[in-house]
Amino acid sequence: MATIGQYLDEHLARGRAYFTREEAQAALGLASHPLSVALLRQVKKGRLANPRRGFYLILRPEDRTLGAPDPVRWIAPLMQSLKLDYRVALLRAAAFHGSSHQAAMVFQVIVPRQVRGFEVGRQRVDFIYQSPSAFRQVNRPDWLSSIKSEAGFAKVAGLELTLLDCARYFHKAAGINGLAQIAQDLGGQASADVLASIAAHYENSSVRRLGYLLERVGHLQQAEALRPFARKAKTMALLDPSVKPLVEGLSDLHEKVSDWLLVINEQVEVDF
Image (cartoon, rainbow, N blue to C red; front, top):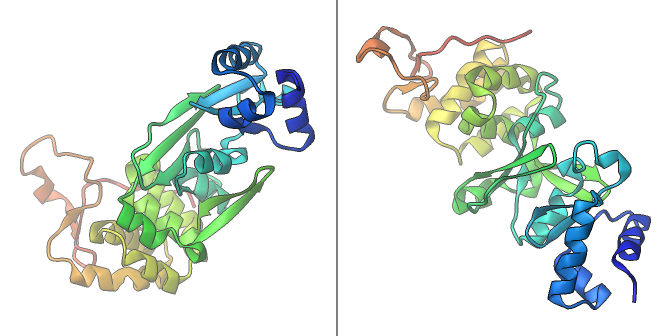
């Protein structure tokens, strides 16, 4: 029977830098307590990281500075172990598609279930909840892309889905200015037809927010594809709902954009 050290070496030799507790127990033939002791010893030595209960990462020497490899290398097997569908999203997805301004400090994943985020070494993984019905409607293969890694391929939001996710969860995408920058960087590459198709599954105010910003940064074809959604709106919405006026009624003084039924309550700055 292999030792824990041999088991880890064999995994790395096969290019597999992760395993579950159940897999290790079956391979090593150890009872629960001795296995826990052996795994904990390897964690303390810096050879293993344990981002989630029952899931382990094997650390190569180059991984030990950050305490864990880039999550893109192991997010797919982690989500498989959790039996949960997902997509890499927001800032990491924007960077993947070419938004060079996005230096994502957090690895963000959208899921259809409440999942607590965690830190492993210097890496932070956050899970953003999307209702199961909305998630099923948009997490379609033709609206997703993939990132190749040693674990195979990780699902990542496609370009158009990234734009709409960032509009919906803009408070987690560096705020309204972060969203404006992403719209500037990526909007011109988006398919207007795909953007409109996905937008049908998002809140009208989020679609209007994105449409206004796409128009503002000059991506007019993509903005026009979203304009029909603005025509369906009944009431004005704040461009940035997180910004509250210091004085009651002060929001009445802000610029209003009737085409998008938006109150521009926050100044937007973009690097061109």
